[in-house]
Length: 364
Image 1 (tube, rainbow, N blue to C red):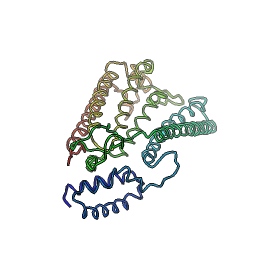
Image 2 (image 1 turned 120 degrees about the vertical axis):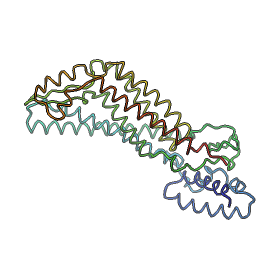
Image 3 (image 1 turned 90 degrees about the vertical axis):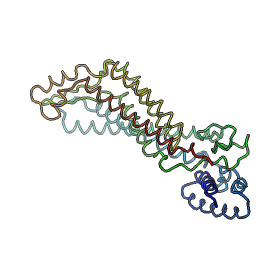
Image 4 (image 1 turned 120 degrees about the horizontal axis):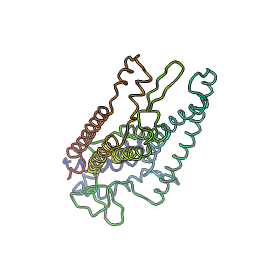
């Protein structure tokens, strides 16, 4: 078996097994490898063997149990991890915001409360958080299930590439059975290990963005300096909440663009042209929006440093001394520098890994 034949075989096995449950993939892969090897002894070329086996999407159905279902095998794995992501992204921010709001409503006064009042406030906050979380998660689960059920009935394809007339240089697995006859030339290369994008990293990024966005929308005053002076408690917001209705839309837009980029990475699963273009476009847009938010808009609370000094007086120590030296210009420049460097690294990584390891480059 030549290297070219072996790669064609690996591509075919990959496209079949990726459509099966995880516990079947290894066994089916070994069976297919043996079957193809036996067939190759009686055929002239590997292409003849794989053409005889047919479209891997259709071949995989031989290992799938025919039954009536709401979400079929072709969609189930994608549906399952998408539900997990949506539930996590829904549960964590709703739980956090509900606890904060519940405690705020449950505690009648900010200072001087007793143990009983504190316990009542905590119970009230937790109860509200549980109720809101259940309602939100049920709604999110139902919404995702409904969308995938419609996709199942309408046979909407989940492949990212558009169908077109294929040639030797264009390999993919977008065969629909309506326009073209499947051949082994449709097989996409098995992604290089260094081109694979970790789902865990994408999920963590999505969760972080969603939580941050929810906090900015519902409880922006959580980003505040809390100073206790005896029994009195002063809360000094870091952001300019008086102009928050102007700042928030641009800030949220920047976060949503970053969220879209993470979703693209999650769906693609490996570095490719689409991921590279998404990284470049979203990175540039986010840089522009960051400059607008931090440099053009009155983002910071103009009285933050003055109020800190008034509340702390002359007794400054450790973190308090550092906070008292707050300078909007320095903080803004440092944050912009961090964003700029992180964006360049993200774009550079996407471009390098796409050009070096991207699956579009490899042809047979």
